[in-house]
Length: 294
Image (cartoon, rainbow, N blue to C red):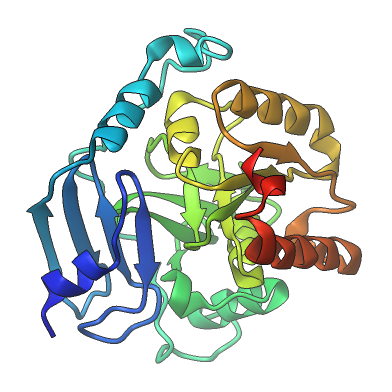
């Protein structure tokens, strides 16, 4: 297969990302392709696959104008403060690697109850997830399920969830990546509280986005601009933050709406799942109509 032709046929516009089955190794959701300001970049992040490449392509006048508009600094003044942006990365970290005690999940590991495989499998079963698809790891030292954070197929950060109540904090960042955790390739994005919820959203058919912090920043907004619609659906006890996030996104040109859930989406409460599933179906059938073009 001609990989360049395959990527070009995706017809990605500036800033658009594609994620799906690798045309080389055939693994699900390991292949990414992105149009980065007129440069096509593609990569498969499966350990056994070396597929990667890049090619410069021309940008249209409209794409250039949009890109210039998107990077106006004054657009972000509604939330920019020195305090909540002091740790934000403008660029990707040059090198990121996980500690040696964080081991990748392997389906061929021991099935003993206290083995990393058994612990990860039990965690995934609880939330309806697949460890291999997510390329989960396990932190042996701190008893954490670790979710890798990828950017264009490169490992840039990771988030660990403790499975032992005695281990604090419950959530741990292993790096400082600023754009959040994104799962899925749908044009409808749903902003949720944590990485587990983002993964659950992907299983429902939309793109799950976890901010990985308490405040929206310019990196988050820039990433969310690429979606046709954004729904902010944080936990029920974060209703004030849900409204605040939605207002900030709207003020910065993102088509966003707020959704009040009955429970954290990762617990898959029947009413919440039904509502989000119907919303996704509606979006799939009507997003080109006037209702979604406002």
